Amino acid sequence: MFSFLRQRSAPPSVTHLDLDGVSTAVAVRTSKRAKSFRLSIPATGPLLTVPEKARWTDAEAFLQRHRHWLAARLPRTVGARRLGAGIELPLRGVPHQVVSTGALRGRVEVVDGDIRVPGASEHQPRRLYDWLKRQALDDLVRQSQIHADRLGVEVRQVRLRSQSSRWGSCSSTGNINYNWRLILAPPHVLDYVAAHEVAHLVEMNHSAAFWATVTRTLPDMERGRAWLKAHGRELMNWQAPGSDG
Image 1 (cartoon, rainbow, N blue to C red):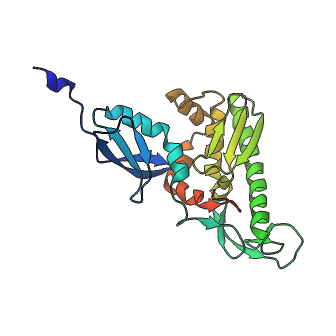
Image 2 (cartoon, rainbow, N blue to C red):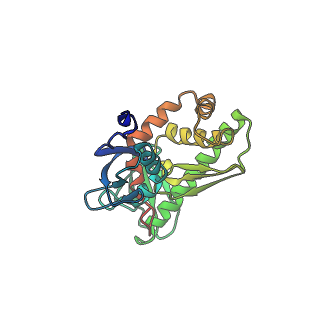
Image 3 (cartoon, one colour):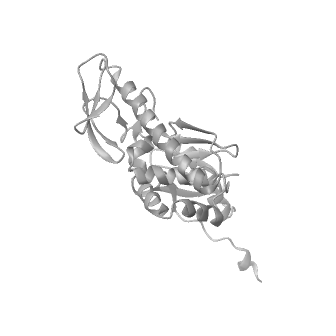
């Protein structure tokens, strides 16, 4: 007589998942034939298939576990941005025009608000990319050390990656990987990600204690976090030369 207490609530037709700071819609379909959860990307967009008798809380957990898989496979061709001369590129959050110097030799440098890139046209994207990574590494090493000193931890190594779904990652051994695209964001955004990753050397989780640690080293952390949520996907559209990420 109390069977209604055991009934599971019907899953929603659409749920939303935070990918790179952007809310992404995922359609939900219930299937009598499905024996397990399945995440796919048909032409209509991300789709989560849920067995008829499955609990929605389990489906949500499955979706969260696979969010990086989804972010890495979502089509990026429409919004993809390529490096090279003749484009406008944000550097530390400030738009700069990228121009060719016309010389085969020389170094990339900022002159009168322009990013001047030497070399043959086919080599300029790589030269610009390598220069951006050096700029990013300098900034991230500096900010990581600042937060490490504040929190009393040691950062062993800082490296750059071209991840398509993460801004950073930290190992318990003190190695931190950052996304090179952070050099395109305003300095307070790069600083937030540095504080976030260094705080993982204190708390290897996203518990309340972790967020308290981030706030301890960066009291206005919400400013950088909010910027990434609003503009993170735009930055992820910038592509490294010779790759799709």
